[in-house]
Length: 286
Image (cartoon, rainbow, N blue to C red; front, side, top):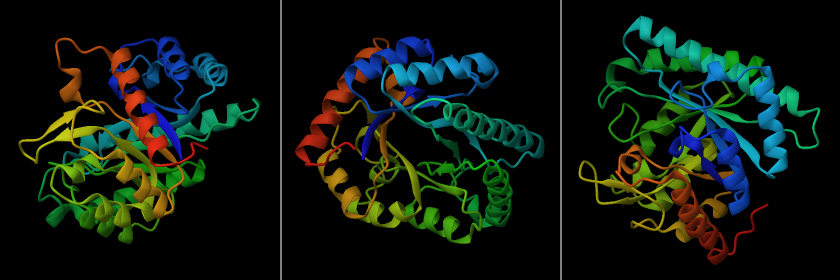
């Protein structure tokens, strides 16, 4: 497994600053956000900027694990869904472009595209056939570009339990549609680590971890080390079920709203906690 970090928690920082800090800390991988609020928004990533980011990744010895455009694909409003779909397709194009450009370097990059199911609890009762249709269509587009799209379940959204997530994946025909397994959303509804891992790993292309305290709807998402999550137990379970990809730390909006929030210090703290957990679990970062 590799230890990664998501720029979700540092949207305003220049990518040069972000990658230099993550590389200096010792992270193995990075996930870059490309929604409009990020310094690396899609509209900012012209050909020259993509090339420069690839050079920075090589300079700081980082793998680009994913590019993230977390948008709702169960959106009921047709116009808004069309807008979201176009943005995710553009992100797929970006991932394909990165993969193609990186072949000219010594360290090819094959990032996953992360997006979301979206919606509200109960939406699957009426919207599931439409969601499956949309995911298969998106998968066809991604497969043509040789890109994997990883969808994320979320507490308080349409897909919020392991059973719902697996049920969707069992109906999706496209091999290009996978899961971004963020176990925190299952932890805060009281589902044991081993149960979540056993059910989700077969469909997982990428992961998120954070820390948390309490149960939904009275839960808090926290910086690694501040809460209750047992990272060693989680890592051992992931290894036992055959996961060998990136474990990517994500810092929630709950944390980012703190008046004293420091994105670089938070990344440092996250690395200290997660790297120690890898060592305590006796899992090599390869």
